[in-house]
Length: 272
Length: 247
Image (cartoon, rainbow over all chains, first blue to last red; front, side, top):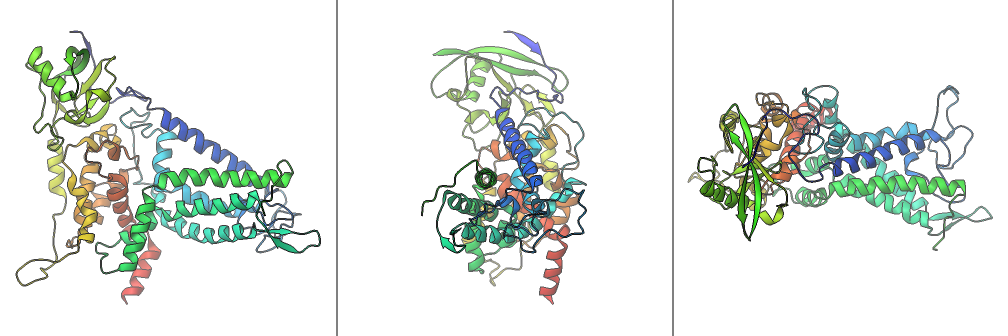
């Protein structure tokens, strides 16, 4: 019988009696989210190679294009060229005008909140593992109380889905040599279609949508349409984490694909 | 039969030490069996709370290799027995003796939550009518055995000791069971926000992970309650829409 003294007090950062590889999940989350944030920020500031000439391909990071980048005519801009009153010294990219919306939707997402509080802020870094800070305010006070606006980002994300669906449709059209447009399917078409499907699954499995569509009521049996919708969203909601990661990967890859095809690094193979 | 080492927390409210015990293990044993064997063989004064040995009473909650678990539901063949297995009491509550923690704080918290307040009976005989589909949602919450493992793993209580300001996942589930009940007429969102500290939950889902009854605590209880708090306090447009609808 051997003994060693331990104090049952608050444990320091990373201290735990756990013997499993508890650090793997937060490390993977840190790498995955960190890589996406770095790449998407870089891509948003580029302001070029966001569409592929001669095709309907448009990067989802730039969709919808409100104004084209200075000196560019993508054919996707809703409001035409960049306004002349924007100072030339200010970095301007069409993505900067819209990326706050999907970014905000993900940032305030219930799944991502739990994931990055753990992986990026170590609060806690893993279940039953000691934390670096003693003080804690949670989402009770500023700034994290702002997370409560998630439903507003949801409304915007639902509108963005319409644009992305239109982009997937546009990606089915290719320009002939004589300037006319012809229906076709390329690898990019499949990628941009997969993108809107994945983002659609992620958005429609949202906890806020689940609440707004039916969870807000205690009695749903007298609202058959809402009940059906609530059951559908609830089924999707079970896989919200999966959809969050798949859609994150696919949307990032969609931008990479459009960018590299536009740069001529990759060739877009036509299937039809 | 193989020998395994169990490193068990021994001590009282103020001092404690981890003591290693060796005992024979056999197929089908759970951690509680090993603890009982150790009591019989070498530590008759080892304090351990248990009752049903079937994962239904919620008495034998402890931390096994650092994770909150029921001792009676943790089979030894799921643990690496080549290294000492640590068994400690729940850390979110004050220790009393050996593996026993003082969970009485939970009983006090429960008293603070507004009780079930049903609407007027639907029938003259004083009974109510409701659809099964409407109570399905809250029936999941009624599986809770009050083992308090979710309270133990919650970092708000465990690491930040917000026992005065936060009621913990167990009582958010309890509140959800009342709040979402089709017959209940009480509104608990004000208390949830201000007195029960729902904003302290940062959705790390540790409570869901350790629940022996597999209640989807975070997704089905806490987040829907957070959304109801948003309805009342953080959604001005939603409030405005409701106002116009009423008129």
